[in-house]
Length: 325
Image 1 (cartoon, helix red, strand yellow):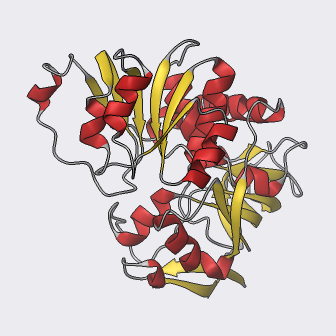
Image 2 (cartoon, one colour):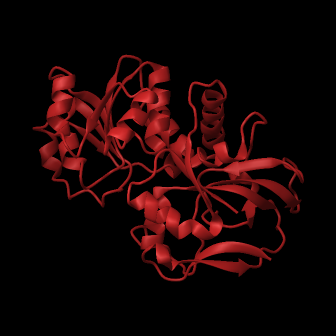
Image 3 (cartoon, helix red, strand yellow):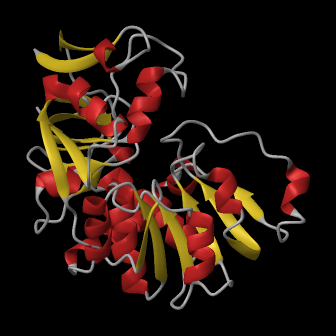
């Protein structure tokens, strides 16, 4: 018998209930995992709350984890019992001690990387990879704005962008988070609660503004972010931490400088096996080289998933958040 967090109705963190579950045996092309560390991400809160509707209830949240292969199904030749593997983009259901997984979603973990480190970096790291390598190939010398620079994605982004040679302007909510962002390579930090980030970006860049805005916050920052962009600049709205962005009048993008706006999802950039492998290899390389350090800011027991969501949504967390089965 395994343990899993089950959501029977969408709502607040209290709807996540620890439950005994039967895992069963793996079918063709599948393996059974004993999971050792599980990543917690904002998308999990969107699924739990119903912001991103799930077709079938009940469900188990979670998109990433690390574990050990305990049993292999028919036809599985690329993995064996005892292999250490990870996944970073589902399928959903990672908030569990054990689960069945298709091998096409799994990547072997390099020996030099620890379980907690990997659990705290897969979805976030792959997100950063597609933001600065696939969606937009960030170049040395570019100046960009990243909202929530001290969050799990932000700290990885700042380090990776610095490694590339870009200049990062980051927004944060406190002096403590400002120090974290600076330590991770953020060149200019704006305390968005005390300062108008639009005017600060304009001042920092001497009126030149930025080529790209990366916005995982949403409602509170979206419209102002458009005013931070250079002509033909790119607005990347990849999350809704403060709620969904307001409706956009498409005609407004012309007078603001013929701007580009995209609402990407990780799956559309890692949807093929080749894309997934490329993203993971690039991520493992940049972490393994020491250019990017993965900071696990907080860990919780599996049964404390509700507490973890409370802290995440209250913006009390820094770096990555994990659950330990």
